[in-house]
Structure formats: structure tokens, C-alpha cells
Image (cartoon, rainbow, N blue to C red; front, side, top):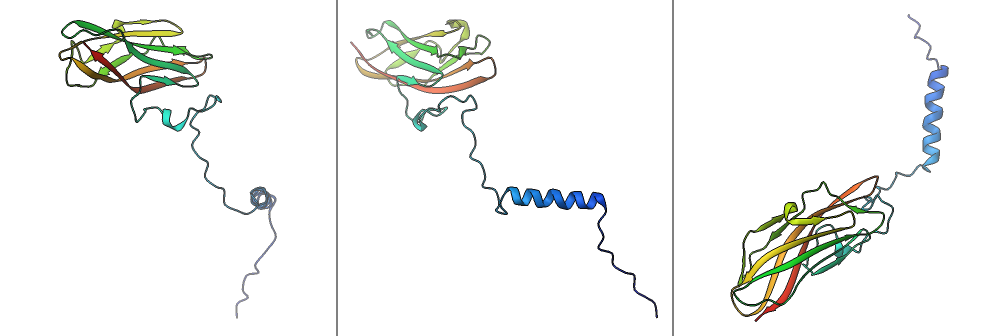
Amino acid sequence: MRASPRLSLSLTPLTRAHWLCGALLLAACGGAPAEPHAPQANPTGAEAPPQSLASTSETPVDHVEDAGFDLSIRTGEVAVGSEATAEVELLSKQPFKCNDKYPYKFTSAASEGLEFSTPEVTSDQATIGHDRVVMKIPFKATTPGVHTLSGKFAFSICTSDQCRIEKRDLSLKFEAK
């Protein structure tokens, strides 16, 4: 009869180190599985904007306030059949600055009673500064009454550490006379 090999329970120093690390990890988490972390929506450490002001707003508005910027659209008096201009204004808030390298763009949404000379207005038609961007949107009201000028504004603001690229829906109600 052959003798069965003796099973050795002695641990080598390397194996002991692995067991010790495993025991420490288990003790550190209390033996319970870790809960998944929610994604960090605002890595800047600044207060996060309210849910209604997420990166792309669901309901178009004429003014958006955020921890990093103020964004608005406005127009003066509008006469039927005459050229008019809406103005989109972006104001950065410290520590953010307007990104002068970003291709700013306003894309107009089709609207009954309004004509646009171009559906997109781009950076070359904007005044871009460190703290402010102003973009003029040319249009013409073809019928009298209340109209809504809507579109999506693409922009970027930066700190020394990071840049935020945003797209926001803007919408402006006005009366053409």
C-alpha cells in the first residue's frame, strides 16, 4: 500500500501576506458589499444646479441661471415685415470664463410666422469676451401677433482645471405689430 502524501497546512510568508490583506479588506468594509456610488454630476465642487436646469433643459425658457453662468435671450420691438434681432447673452460667473476657443452656435427652431436668414448663427457672428458672449440672431416676423422664437444655444465655460460644454434650449415670446 502506498502512503498518501501528507497535506501541509503551513503557509509561506507570501501566502500569509495575501491572507492578511484579504482579512483587512473584509474588515474594512464590514463584510458588507459596497453600495454603488451615484455619478458625480458636478466635479467642480460648486453647488449643483437644480434638476430642472440640467445640461439640456426640457422646457425652453428665456433665462437660465446656473452656478457657472447666466444665459438669456431678448429682443426689442418687432415690426411685421421688418428685420429684427434677438440677442443671446452668456455671462460667466467666477471661477468660470467664457471659452474663446469653442464654436458657439445658436440653431433656430422653425416657427410659424417667423423667417430666419440662416437657421444657424455661429461664433463668427458673436462678440466673445472672457466674461461675456453676445450673439445676435436676425429674423423677420411675417405675421402680426404673438410669436415664439426658439432654438438651442451651444456654448462652453472653463476654469483653469476643466471646461463645461453645454447646450441649452431658449425660447422667447414676443408680439409683432
